[in-house]
Image (cartoon, rainbow, N blue to C red):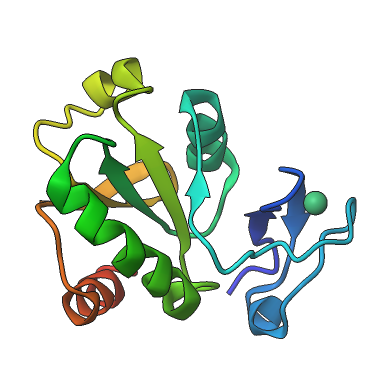
Length: 145
Ligand SMILES: [Zn+2]
């Protein structure tokens, strides 16, 4: 496995090079000294998400949601809980499609919530509809790449 493994800091957005073998040791950011993995989903806008697509070597698990969507609200605590179990293997990201309508259009999000996994800038799979925690964990790990 390559030593170059780029991880974007959850706090300051700096790109850190953390060998995969060190990811489990709660690595700290070289710039801001905070943990590069926060253990929580990150709320990103289009520019922030684009940066992750281009620069992050971690697979991304993304929740496309909206504040007016009931199933999304049910999904939110499950997604937060999933972050504690799926990081650092994944980076969990939330995109508010109500705010990021252009991005949601580009991604052809047709129903919410939609969960999707991206790797090396490419969408691997997506799943419309809310999932329970165990289903979400199993689904993500199956498609970790
Ligand atoms: Zn940082």
